Image (tube, rainbow, N blue to C red; front, top):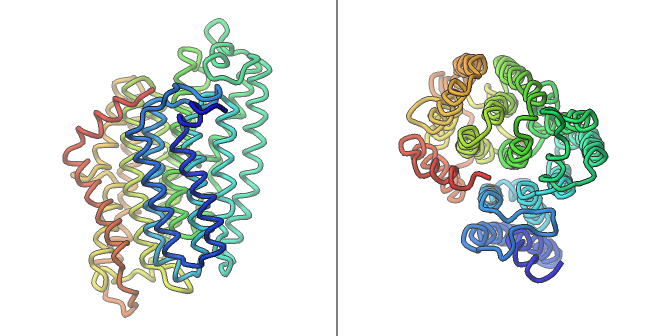
Length: 471
């Protein structure tokens, strides 16, 4: 690579080289909080660089784009990782995490997510996807004293290896059909008489299996509740937001590049969207564990975002990116509350354990209630506007049945979102006293709450921004 290409990948280099420096420094200086804050600072610098620095090249090595869309995604994933490191300060102390290793792995994950969203070829897509997936295998089982974490890591490893196989075979079939890995040439070469070449269609079928696993589409979602429950709460938050969001943002230009030839693929996505909305919603209803409920909730939300993908174009892309941001804020905030409740030997997850916590810890409990209300789509929080945007776009685009099912599943979801809030505030007080929240936790939770309230009352700036960066 020449100097101009390296300059064009400056945010990713900051994340990757910074992660290497933190990892090596952590071996010499055992100061957990220092390395966590260093990692957070590096992620913020990468986000600032992606937002303000104009790359000299539009594409690097024929694999990665430096478009406004790619830079926007880099900003979002870098900020998510910075928030994860901030919320992890007390959690890492409680569980004796190695600060250097933990921060470095999260920075490597941010670099992989950024490369995935910026991919302009199937080779770049594969490298970016596997870069952060390999990191997640380690982070899920990072708490070596927790057997559930080891089990969750093994489950994710097995399912992830299978998904990687499908992804590699799918890319190989597309290359066989077109002779190119680059998106523009490969997607154009797949089209034949208004449809797709048979080999290309088989390749896309395998790609959908891999993507279905990565973003927990039904029926590829069965790993999700076990892994979310066993993983450390901050890592569960990253998996539910940034990891899935990076895959969706990489898939958006891919599907758009097929144009009218995507009809057969959209028929499959139509069915997957219905199964995912219904499967995630009904599976969440009987849950009595907060992390498992949020896991199935994330499955249902992937169904809503799949509807926006199906709509496509400027309307669908704008609805998808807006919903992805507001969903990520609320979901990350909910996992942030669980992180702040953690004790040295366990995380507070079961509904029986959170009984009456609204009286003992009103600020964090109120924040959790707000995040759950946003996920349910209750106005004036941002989740309402995000769902309204997707369902309105679906009606305008002729996907009436998807809009109806989406509205119905959103109404049903009120039950499983209200249930933990009722347990928190409307039952007898419990003597189960937790640690007081720390400054870092209150800063992050307050920021997430302010953001979902602001984007719910005044969504204009975010809508204008996502419309500006659309590929």
